[in-house]
Length: 266
Image (cartoon, rainbow, N blue to C red; front, side):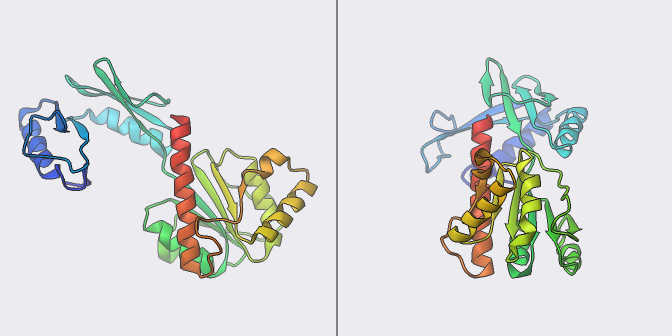
């Protein structure tokens, strides 16, 4: 068994019920908590959990769903109690029951583009890897290519000019985090990020540094509405100094905004 449903409250029974469903080859809907027939299994939160078990989901539908997610598209899975998984579609829907059919949304994973160098870049990349996030590092320092390879980071891009065009495959599930102390590298990356649907754009620096950053971009013709998309100072912990606290602070902000974007879009 992998994963969990209720942090341990009902998972042992759910494993048993799943084994029975596999033997019977029949989908089943279980209710735990308030209104459940399992009186000896209680949820401390006082809520209700419904679990639909599909003992034999169609492999072609699962493969279609995985291919859509790999191409960074939202997947809507549709189930019925009678037949289990019935379809995987590449469009949004409302999560929940609609008559006899249940729909659930699977968004692409948050992908993270971290630009910069030094301890903040290393600390943030390593912490993000523990979350299994796909990461791309961008740095003018070529030595971070070796770090990227050794740490399992998805990819590394060597920045050779602060004035060149920076290509990043950004979508609305992407976050861009700049961790430069030499802010001359920022404008080209920020311009690319602002020209994308990325849900988060943030850059390291004090409030004074951020104000100067915005003035610089405004002088380059960036509109106020776009400037407002840039988060700064970054993070949920004010004035974080050491690299690990900064990484934790910035990633907490990014994950929170990612969750907010899911709520807004669905």
